[in-house]
Length: 57
Image (cartoon, rainbow, N blue to C red; front, side, top):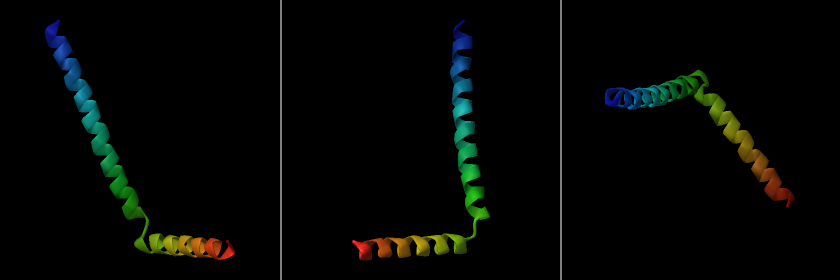
């Protein structure tokens, strides 16, 4: 019975490790799919919207 309990925590640890690995992997591939230029354009649009809002107040 003790051996089965030890294996349970090994499986839980393995599942957690796989989940963390897949999360990091997919985050990395998602960032590569979007070009840096798109990030720059979005940041520029957000900055201009913030500036317009500050001018209106």
